Length: 126
Image 1 (tube, rainbow, N blue to C red):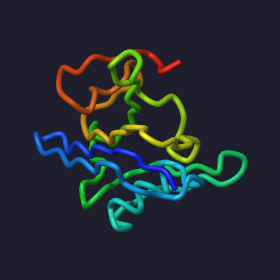
Image 2 (image 1 turned 90 degrees about the vertical axis):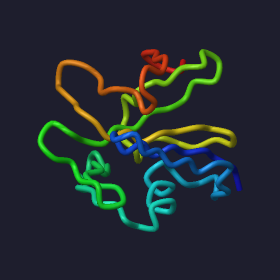
Image 3 (image 1 turned 30 degrees about the vertical axis):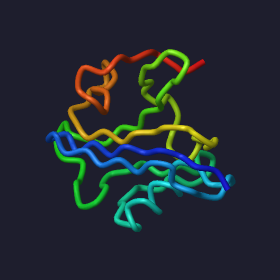
């Protein structure tokens, strides 16, 4: 078992933290999201070769127009958020890791806004 932290930011000022959530170490970020949202997650599954879920709704909040869900990782060594460049199924979890789902405007030309308004961002945690 490991303990992970997750923020779900609904884009309207409402934020819900799930801290020190004990989960199996074999889970990925999609399994963790399903667990925290009590399976109130909608997603489009893309089979082989991707085997990925594209999350389209969490807790009844659905992608609409230019608004969509994005997943972020908190980089402890830089004290900043990084927009995930991989799908939710490819995010392996480690004890003490912090992730966030953020609902907001998205575009194909730049990354969405971070989960906490005006938070520091970096291109990656590496």
